[in-house]
Image 1 (tube, rainbow, N blue to C red):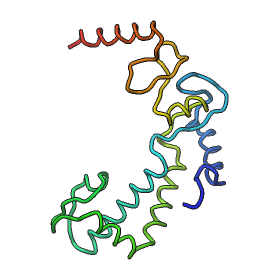
Image 2 (image 1 turned 90 degrees about the vertical axis):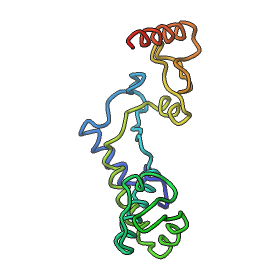
Image 3 (image 1 turned 135 degrees about the vertical axis):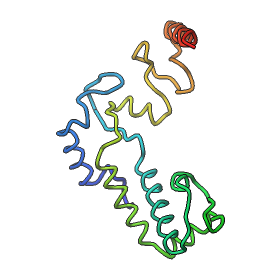
Length: 173
C-alpha cells in the first residue's frame, strides 16, 4: 500500500474498462452533470483491505489453532468468542507480526475487488466532494447540499416539501 490506488496504472486501465462496460455512467447520478465524472466506491479501499486482512487472519488462526468462530467475527472489530475461548485484539497483532505475508495477500485481494468497480455510483467532482464531507444533494431543489442528518437543504420551500413528505409517510402506518 505504498501509494493511493487511484494513481496506479492498473486503476486507470480498470476505470477505462468499467466505462466501456457501462459500470461508470455518462452523467452524475445525483445532479445529472456530465463534467468531471468520477466513480465513488461505496466501500473504500482501506475498508476492503482491513476486512480482507481480518478475514485471512481469522481463517488461518482457526485452522492452525483448531477453533470455530461466529460469522460476525469477520465483520466486527475487536476480539470475539471462539469455541476455545475469547480472542483479544492483541492476539491479532501478534499473529500478524508472525505472518506478514497476510498483509500482501489482503492487499492483492482488496485491489482486485476495488478494481472490479462493482459497488460504485458515478458522481461529478462537486457531488463526490460533498459525499466525503457527509453531505448529499437536496432531492427537492437539486441545487443545494445538506448534511445527511437533515431531511433537506435550508431552503424554506424544500423544508416545507420535506415536512409534507414526512407527514404523508406517517399516514401509511
